[in-house]
Image 1: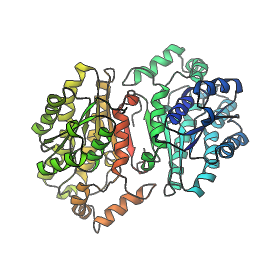
Image 2: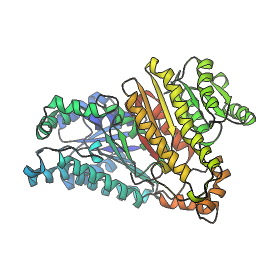
Image 3: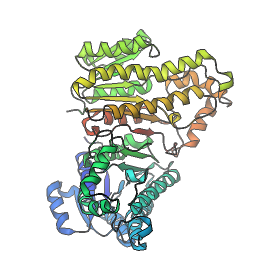
Image 4: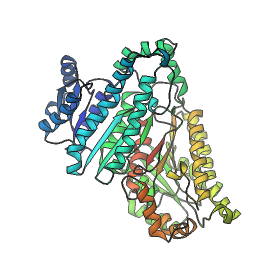
Length: 259
Length: 260
């Protein structure tokens, strides 16, 4: 018997990294999981790796498009009959630069990828969760949703915005059996980190190794986090035991954030 | 197979309410638990109710006293050979008052019960955990560790202090396989709150116990008090291998009350 038996989850950016870790955590506890990603061939490898049969389902779509975000939620409901858990997990940033040199396009892209995607999927999920008076919404935010490092303002601003959205939303639906929380992981060496880390490091005046060292050294554990660390908290929040936890910005950062 | 198979825990204030829920949850996950409380009769009743046989034991002692807190740690290690999870959960107020009316006696009691107890327990537990390079310290703090309501200055001050202690300790032992975390529950209708809530409500300028519950509930998003099981689930997560990289965390279980 799992803590999520019969629950249906939708995870954006669920084919790799943190999203995939959360998908595995949910499946182990008995949930059905729709995972989203842009690349069908990667998704097929992921589904094969999960080996969850009919309990896992792939939904193609680019979270930078409103229609895709809405379709990801709708397709989850069409396929599995309901949605109990939304994990707005996709995100990242490219085009990092100090603010004086930052382009409009880079800021816009980060806000769409991280913040608007969270808003679009949350709004759509609420359309299902509010009438059923139950649900769990989790946004994968970041340590950088609580602090701010120089050179990566596009990411920091978008993640802070997500945290504000989560707080407001949690109070809107707090009496309806719906919780809304943000997970704030420290640095994890996911595919996105490996792709976007080097240019981010450059914008911060570091190389990639220096970037990872900086994140590790600020923590108490002096190492990076792992996707499983995030998945364990997500699984708790998704379960019945998480009913009294909402509006929270939960640090999973080895002791880095000051609050 | 449980998440805490073979792990040994001790819990101050473990016979009732939040501590008891932690004890029940740890045992359900395969842990062994020593619960502490002041009252031998309640302690025995707790063991009978838990029905965990040799996997549970009771240690009598007042958590506001150094010898009792250190005695609990030592007893647990002696009884089960090790200590993996130290839950410093006991705490509260007896006859709180606004600062201008606060007595030295009440102030000292709250400092001993809420803050010194955590320091004494943590220090003793870490002396055992550091050589083993493994352990979990879980402190029951409160929303009042981040906020501050009028009429409960000692509680707010000591819970703030506990959060600082947790953060500092987490960084001291962060590379040794030991995590130190705080859980920050919102109001829960525990036995302690039922016993001291009416007096606390008056000190806070309220009409009575019902207004106390209503005030805390209304500040949350869920518009209700929290439940002991909600805290216990977080404690199980923190105690498990899955949370090996979560430390210095101020984990809210407050239905959306705290602003940060």
